[in-house]
Length: 79
Ligand SMILES: [Zn+2]
Image (tube, rainbow, N blue to C red):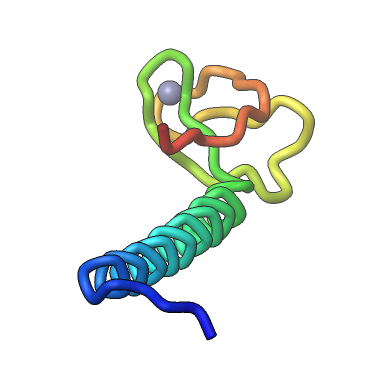
């Protein structure tokens, strides 16, 4: 049996608990970023007027519905 003084036992339990919270937090953040990137996959922002629009079925160079400028398909970035 491992003998630990009480302060070390409390510290170890608290440390393991905090490590668990950080691992869950990082995993949730990675999943959230992937989900948002997937949601914005078919959206692009006009390079002239910054209007955001869907590019599904708009051809190779989708035209901005706001100003009519041709745009390349560049997925929106969150960060
Ligand atoms: Zn535009």
